[in-house]
Structures are given as C-alpha cells and as structure tokens.
Image (cartoon, rainbow, N blue to C red; front, top):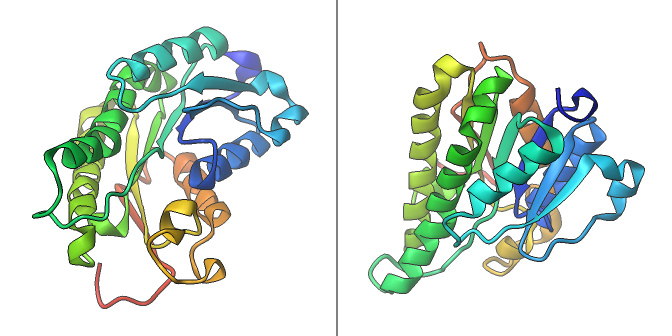
Length: 236
C-alpha cells in the first residue's frame, strides 16, 4: 500500500510556480509527494508531515533521470499514482531563426523528458488501477499566437499529441493522461515575455486546483485536454 496507504505523485519543476503550487495542493490533500528539482530544497509546508515528502535532483536533459527517480519513489513509498510533468522551457524564437541546439533543448525538455518520465512510471501507474499523467501543455499547443512563439508551439503541440498517445497506450490499464493547456500563468516564465500584470494572469494556485480535480476524476471521466485562459481569444 505504500506509506500509510497515501497516494503518491511525482511533480517535476516543483521548486516554483505551477509545480510548487501543485505539490502543496496534493500534499495538503493527503498525498505523498516527490519533488523533482534541479536543486532540491525542502519547502516550508513540508514541516507538517516531512515523511510524506521526497526530494529528487531532477535534470530533464538526462536520459536516465526518469528511471532513477521512479526507482527511488517506488523504494520510498511503494507506489506511484500520478505524474505531473511540469518542467519546461521557453525559447522565444521563430521556427526559422531557432538554432538546432535551441530546438533540440526545447524538444528534449518539453517533450522527451515527460515521455521518459511517464514510461519510467508506467508499470506502477498501471498497478495503481487509476494512474494519472498530467502533462503541462500550453495554449501555444493549440494555436501559434505569434512568430516568436513558433518554436515553443511546436514543442507544445507535441505535448498535446503525447497526452492522446498515452491515453491510448494506458486506457486498458486504468491510466488516464491529460494535457493541461494554460495561457499566461503568473510565473517567472510568463513575466519574462509579457507586460501583462501578474494579477491579470491565471494564478498557479488556481491551476493546481484544476490539476487536482483532473487527477481525482474517475476512469470513466477521461479528459485528454483541458484549456485554461486569462484572456478572451477568438480561438484556441
């Protein structure tokens, strides 16, 4: 059953922004959480039940990072019920101007890393009976908003496709995958590319509420894509 029967989630990019908000939300709901961070640091809120918090030095560019992380979590908690693949990068380049190295980094971190992480946790997610994979996509995976967001959009379109591919691969095992696709979220990444005020953006805590809801849905209420926007758009 794992640690006192607590459901267990892996969250990448858990040191700040959306990842940190999701980790706290699930922890407060009674989950055991494993926090993937480049520089692991125990959050203050973990003091309430430190035995339910695990830290892992996660480098998304390392091909074996997911395998090592899944092994540590299984050893510590005995189960994996959910993966929240939140770590990602933005390279503001047109698809013409982006360099090979930049495109490789975008695809490695935004696409390959979550794919590897899901694969590493796959057997445990299947054993859970209602395993969940949440992929942080973007509305940039639904439309190309501008030329400068083009390269990033290519990677996020792939993330949405991956959510559907994982849904097909794991449906009979009770695994459900969802691409959560926000527009501007009040994080460091968004603040660097827009003049929009933080309080006019979607808040990380609200996105964490959405992700908790998606994880808690029964197998019979599968959601492959969930779009969230802070502004009116003609389409996405």
